[in-house]
Amino acid sequence: MSPTLATFKIPEITNEPMKSYAPGSPERKALQDAIAEMEKELPFEVPCIVNGKPVKTGKLAKQPLPWDHANHLCTYHEADQAAVAAAIDGALAAKAEWEALPWSDRAAIFLKAADLVSGKYRYKLMAATILGQGKNAWQAEIDAAAELTDFLRFGVKYVEELYAVQPPRNSAGSWNRVEYRALEGFVFAVSPFNFTAIGGNLSAAPILVGNTVVWKPSPAATYSNYLIYKIFEEAGLPAGVLQFVPGPPAEVVAQVISHPEFAALHFTGSTFVFKKLWKDIAANIDNYKGYPRIVGETGGKNFHLIHPSAEVKNAVLQSVRGAFEYQGQKCSALSRLYVPSSLWSNGFKEQLLTETAKLKVGPAHDFTNFIGPVIGRPAYDKIIGYINKAKEAGGEVLIGGTGDDSKGYYIQPTVILTKDPKSVTMVEEIFGPVLTVYVYEDADFEKTAQLIDSSTAYALTGSIFSTDRKALIQATNILRNAAGNVYYNEKCTGAVVGQQPFGGARASGTNDKAGSMAIFYRFVSARSIKENFIGLEDALYPSNLA
Ligand SMILES: NC(=O)c1ccc[n+]([C@@H]2O[C@H](COP(=O)([O-])OP(=O)(O)OC[C@H]3O[C@@H](n4cnc5c(N)ncnc54)[C@H](O)[C@@H]3O)[C@@H](O)[C@H]2O)c1
Ligand SMILES: N[C@@H](CCC=O)C(=O)O
Image 1 (cartoon, rainbow, N blue to C red):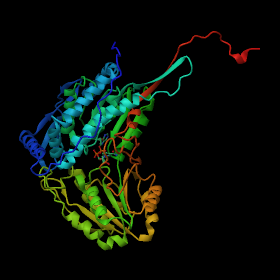
Image 2 (image 1 turned 180 degrees about the horizontal axis):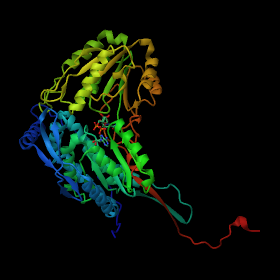
Image 3 (image 1 turned 90 degrees about the vertical axis):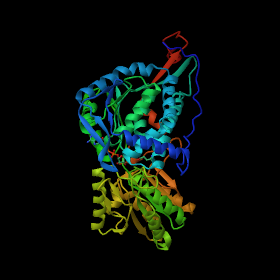
Image 4 (image 1 turned 135 degrees about the horizontal axis):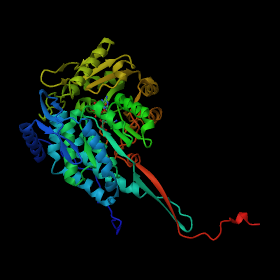
């Protein structure tokens, strides 16, 4: 038994400062060196990790380079049934000791992991994200370096605050306490390709509050996610607490969620896959020991609503960044833009096309490219398919509209003008560098806000651009349920941990707000404890007396 001899305070937590990677900066050189070294050494071999030991199943799959699809970043061993079964057993076996570890020790492991991400492994993790997932230097910095570090450090802070939430009242002679137990069973993390940090957070958040986790990374982010596993291990995470099982998604997931001790799904990915998993879990409900928690952050169809009073230059530049950063492969990416006709014909259109034309497309490790490759063949075909559908439906391609998949999967940043606000590219998630514009009559601002609210199934992010406070308030009210993250005069991407808790509702997810205290509630099961100090003198109450 471990004595409690003090109430420790965690170090002060602030956001990881972001580096600029400007020409001549030491960080640019360090990152370029890390990329060059990784390019020389690839392809890597990635095993599953079960109970802290590498498992090589011999069932091999590849993570191709999106900018050079003939080659791959890593070959990984896909988890087979035996490996998945051993991973679940191992997670269950590691649970009691991990949950019993004093909170300060669990916290210290993740504070150390954060320091390893922000320091020793910063450039390596970024290089894996740049080469494997096609992010440019800035996008890799805000994801693999800054956001991952912030998730870990702020996670520790939020758990400390959560543990401090205690009943506000005690009646005389008693003391009320609440303890935040980890969930009974194990947690399953299933992560997407597009944010290295999300893989780290989906696994680390439940672990921080005492759970053990089986983690299935995205095939297209296997290597960066493997590096995260190794960082957690170096930080001191005991063997078995996190089980790393890359593998054929449908098979691995089906096996894990049919286990009786499956306690929670921590998912980020597409709406389609999340709904399927929800149904599969529901179909298994009689086999579980408890009611599994289901946490899922999913797709978006995010908007910018421009009011006639908006500053055009800012609205244009924010829209270009929001739509085209990381090739539009952010759940938060701008993909439908509503512009009043007075602004559209008075400079907005011209500036939008001029700024879009400046974006260079090419391999992300050439730092002058703003737009890198999209993640793979299915994504490339799907995005080009959407552009074609928009054209067939009468959309006018104002710029872009073409791609080149000869070596890597490149798509030019594309702006489509539509007269139909419910046309396919105004409604469905594309997840690529495609922005559709609808021009509305100035007098229809309110009607346009209602249109935004009602035209898609999603409700993730959105921005309102206006210098007129009344218009901001009006649109905010109409769009109350249309976005879980709303911005004023700022693009709809780029939420920062500790500053804008992230997530959306409707088809965009369970809105449990990654990067806030709220997410930790989903992975604990509180137990109330009342202790009585004064013994009873009589079984009868005064009201029973004659
Ligand atoms: N709301 C958010 O916070 C957020 C953040 C990032 C990404 N996303 C969303 O994620 C999507 C992009 O990521 P993606 O392409 O990796 O998503 P995806 O749904 O294809 O994959 C997500 C995870 O599910 C697994 N998976 C895929 N098919 C499966 C199946 N049939 N059965 C079981 N598991 C399966 C994948 O291997 C991966 O681990 C977009 O829709 C984006 O909007 C949302
Ligand atoms: N949190 C990120 C998006 C994550 C999804 O891809 C943002 O706010 O841009």
